[in-house]
Length: 253
Image 1 (cartoon, rainbow, N blue to C red):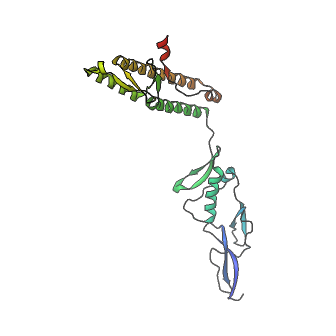
Image 2 (image 1 turned 180 degrees about the vertical axis):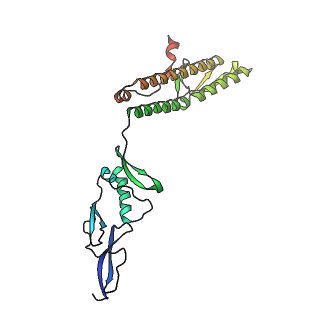
Image 3 (image 1 turned 30 degrees about the vertical axis):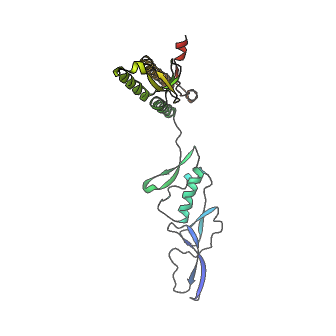
């Protein structure tokens, strides 16, 4: 073949996958570039990746994954590689596992990518998660969210900070020589002001203590129910919630 003849031939990436077509000068004594093969250009690149075969005279078709399960068979994909093949696989891994409860992307050494089936949780795993959920909800409730309905006729905060605040008010009131005459405006859980006496503050203090004890009793009851559960269905029906104690009923009794 004359040396001034050019031919369109496929070229491959660093991993041997078809990456496009280039025009190459052909002729006696002219060697092809190492990434170019004298082979037929692959056609269905929408549905297949094509890898150059060992004799370098053709390509082996590899179906592109269409499901998360098929991604598993693709193995480990480099994070650093910028080839079209690796870039498309990383995109497919993300797309096909998004929202899946069965498969997920796992990042390995050097941030490499692979898709794995999510191990099925054992009953003990589910029970441990339920216990952790109980601890989290209780902590949130008790430290920043607990309330009670006071016998004084309004709703008040009863979390750990509220206990400190009321105790501080009692100390200040007992040290004041004018408190008995002037009283104090106390803000309830809804930011409404109520005039209270020293006796009222001590009532609130006792009610907050009692509400805290009730919350712990609720937590321990729920913990025992979780520990006693024998099936996942029994765990699922356990509703984790903490409720305000209503002291107004005892006041009207």
